[in-house]
Length: 510
Image 1 (tube, rainbow, N blue to C red):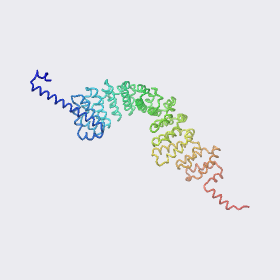
Image 2: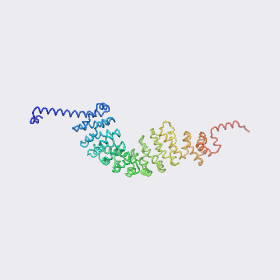
Image 3: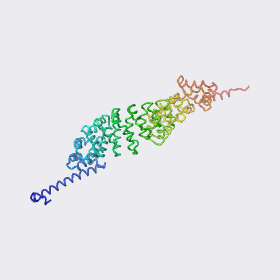
Image 4: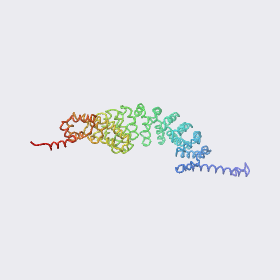
């Protein structure tokens, strides 16, 4: 340094310049040490309150504009970690006017800064629609969309993640992502070789599609379904989960969108997300349900229900219910696929009330069509189980309501008397009248059933029912009694044995 300075300046001036270099170098090191320390401290939740009380946001703000790129990047990293921790800190980023300068410098910085800046926008936006709107208003969405065109896959991934976080809140925010031109670039990201980028792109398309049919159509119009369908064969499980989520969000809005997913020939691939997709498709029309049945989707779902537990079963249970609800033939397809037996197994194994309620609903959709459908439910011994869930005090209100509705709809079609007889002993009056009604319909036309009804104790139980005179229940009892000789009815009536004993006592032999 002395050899450089001495020819152009005096010794004193050279010494002063050396001191200036040392001072500025120390200042730069101090700034770098500060942002690195804050970034490290922000990684630990126990330090967040201390940093917040120390006014760390105001101290980091000027460092976002530092002349040293490394300091800018580390400051942005510290901000993203702080904003990610809580709503209050994310709001502080907005209130300190950090977002505008962050967005303004985003386009001109290197890839490391872009990733850190995108992380800040994501961390702010995740907490609420209001904070996401603040990101939109400062031009953050447009800046993130530009990052999707970057050559670096990490920058694209960070930008796609932030856009997905913004889009998932509501339809208006999702529309702002669409209006910025994100969808075509996200579809291109699906074609990139990096697996993490593929996952994030599929997830963001799912978040955009879920709100309205118009947003889902915007995704479809870019050819996204074909690219998503290609991803199904990828061995990466996380990617397939996001792909099936996106396809199910597209399918759920309308028949037309569901048909477009069908045309992509993605069936049959069965796991939870595929089952969710099929659930969204089959609920649209009987024709789409028949397509799923014809390609083996029904049998696959029934097998899937036997291989999993808990909430993983829920989409499959509801899928069976939606299919059965459309028509007698489709409900019979569920029965032939052993769907009733599988639902019975789910009902006996699951403990969560919302899963039981969905299962009960699906059973009701199967059994309410014809006597043959009701018999399939009754022979699986499900009627006593439905009654038990309805009467159990610990059942949730939704489970009780669905059990009652399913039980009544099945009973009104059931003519399988062995399945009905057990209900005579335990059912409350509002259910009992439907049971007795079915006996009054079948017994007049079936002599074997009448004989079995007597020998099994059914006729005796009917005589013990305390029905209000003139009520429908009393009319059904009278109809049953008219099917038997009067002396048999009297024999099984309460108190008749005492009458016989009294007659015996008063009897005088000749």
